[in-house]
Image 1 (cartoon, rainbow, N blue to C red):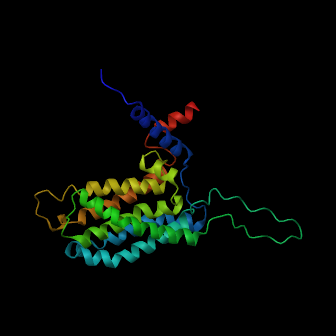
Image 2 (cartoon, one colour):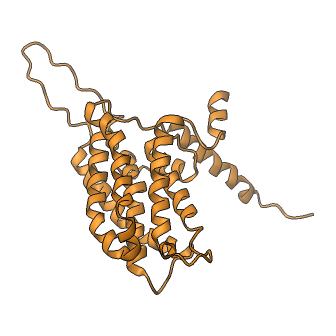
Image 3 (cartoon, rainbow, N blue to C red):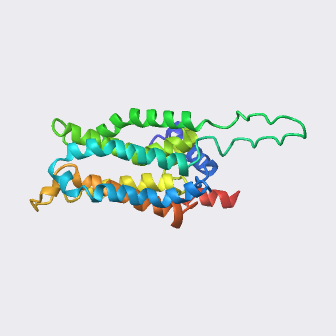
Length: 258
């Protein structure tokens, strides 16, 4: 009769319960209900697609030069998007300001988050996570000793697109990232963008080893275009078609049982 370790047997359900509880507490992130926020959500994907759609030939000819010159533009577009369209981490939990009594001066409410600090910390976290993404690309088959600038710039684009908005709206809250990592987070523009970017990058790698002898098959052109196309598709899908739904139905079943 095989031996059974009760600690090992109990750990898996415990992990699932923890992830499920974290996902159940995580709510989808809404877009700011301001004219600038609503306009920005539509302009944002158009600008990203137009930026690289117009640079295809140049990107195939000299990927590093194009990625270096477009990186500040991508960063500026992402900063504008999160600033105008997304709530900063903790803003949804902030208490509303108390209504001032007649004759009483209105006090500044310091309980809410500071968007400027949230923006700075999000950019810092994005920069810190980029080397880890570079390593992940290498582990999944990217050139190890060659094309280092190509892979690093590709990793930077992935971090800016998929992770920077998530850092801005969730900060470093462990429960939120546990739900995101376990694919139990509710769909919204930020989570949809992450899922779409990863899937698009994976799909973009398919043409590289094919024996077509095309110039655009070289690293990392197809992955970059798959990354951007997937990000936009996931962002739109998460923000409109699947908003509030979850990839894993376990959380929904637990919510109904409760």
